[in-house]
Length: 222
Length: 222
DNA sequence: CTATACTGTTACCTTTAAGTTACCATTACT
DNA sequence: AGTAATGGTAACTTAAAGGTAACAGTATAG
Image (cartoon, rainbow over all chains, first blue to last red; front, side, top):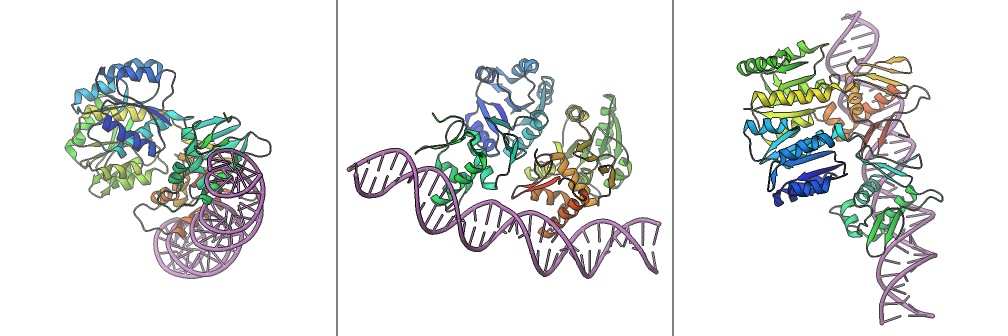
């Protein structure tokens, strides 16, 4: 699941991004209308969070522009709670509306609800003959379903989120075993187990370790 | 378009009804939980507006009961704006939430949006030789009708709503036994009972548990 | 009032995820 | 070349999670 966040308040944006990413939601971030327009071309989003008051104009105009080309549901964010503002937002095609200040938890819930109807395929990834649905927890290699352990799932999700970039050993350890004593062997075992699960026979290797840099989930080892 | 309004404040209710009907929305009205339960049997609604604080209990419990058979989207209405109240409401299956005081214009907009999304959702599902009709509460496996206990219905409805994604044990427990002390055995028993009900002889297993992640209703190789 | 069904409870069994150990392979650096 | 350091694999072990069956109290229906 990937969303677009357009917000000029850098602090708020950063908090929101951290929170959303902790929930497994990928976030593209723009801090102005112009930037947003540049970022979103050719990109599919499951939802859009749009601040109304932006440095170079109002989010409403952007929403109206998008309504034709982009079907992603829009949630407006603003400090203004007057009725006419809300009505204008809904008229511009908003599917939801939050007034600042708000709790990040609520934002996440509402975003997830919005995206649910729209996403369908959004949590689905393909890599070579490997297909992964993070939401449904379904992973297949060349048609055959693979069963992953809990630890392996968290690892796959992590690797996938960064793919094709490598993820450092330190980060993997912190993600899979948060607040826990971990020794190097646990880490090594997990990797072997995931590897043997993902590749049968002479299938292409998808887990590449780059010495001293970490592990990457990708096609070729460059 | 017809909706159900459950609200004990008669003045507010009357205002809302007038407003909604002016918008061409038909409204069934109940002022208590008991009354609501009586009214809604066998009736189809495009959306439900539910006050949380009602004379004879909380709207949350009603929402949870309804989730089995009624797929209508629920908008909660309440004077309480605390985060935990909102989270509880969303956990109970709310799709939207408005805190009093609110503008009737906004209520109408949000109700229309909810109903619109809902109108394209199905209440009938097929999975392998299993067929489920949530509204009619009929479930069949390979032509033969299956009789499920109340608990089993809630569980099936829950699983179906998320299928093919797994539902966590925690969520199942909160849904089947809201606000109750639950031990792990009750959960385990419910699952075996549902399982033995759904699959006779050598039929395909449809309930799959993913260790540490929950239970999913799906075909094995989905 | 009896029979039936639902659900909580207990006891027991099976499966497996994951930590541990030991050993091998590869790379890198003095 | 020799020796750390790093990464990879296989095999063993066990605590925990999941699964089943049987019993009992309670509610429900006829």
